[in-house]
Length: 228
Image 1 (cartoon, one colour):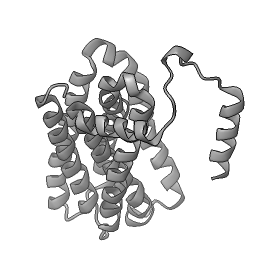
Image 2 (cartoon, helix red, strand yellow; image 1 turned 30 degrees about the horizontal axis):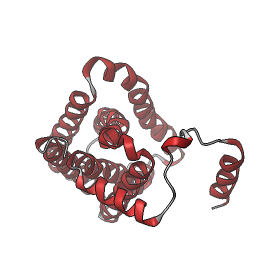
Image 3 (cartoon, helix red, strand yellow; image 1 turned 120 degrees about the vertical axis):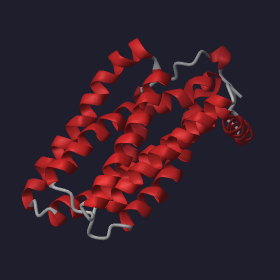
Image 4 (cartoon, one colour; image 1 turned 180 degrees about the horizontal axis):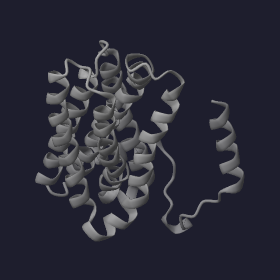
């Protein structure tokens, strides 16, 4: 709360409005409500927003479970921080490479490939996890998470950009609606995955597989309807 207040004051004092005066519209709840209805009525925006919530929900499920899994289930103790940092590096590498890849492949192709990869990889490792009775060797678990997080790193930026693509004329409200809806989707899903932890990694891997498949279905629904 304190940080939000500081940022709000700082922005109000130091960040001028860049929108030309001739194109500004008065602030009103009616205009905001109309923009919200417009965002929810655009199939592409809504579909990719749902997909964003699904993918972030899987990631929140990981954040809710990772300490129990690595520090206790795999008895890493203080080495937990090191392993967590290694996994985070995969996200960072994806974010760094995404800018180059997206210029070559395009957002949609890259997003579809990352979703397909995440879903397929998660389903395959889910089978491995069941065979190992929820306790695969640590090297196998890390070998799963590194590519999975790379896919998630690709998806974070691209899904949000694809949801925003048709909303340039209401970009501010559009970004707010997308952020709110995706968060409303991701938090309960991530909580559900985290609370399902049973001393094995089965719920976590199942969450990755199921939510990535659901995200893929949402993007398919979004594109099937075109731009409206």
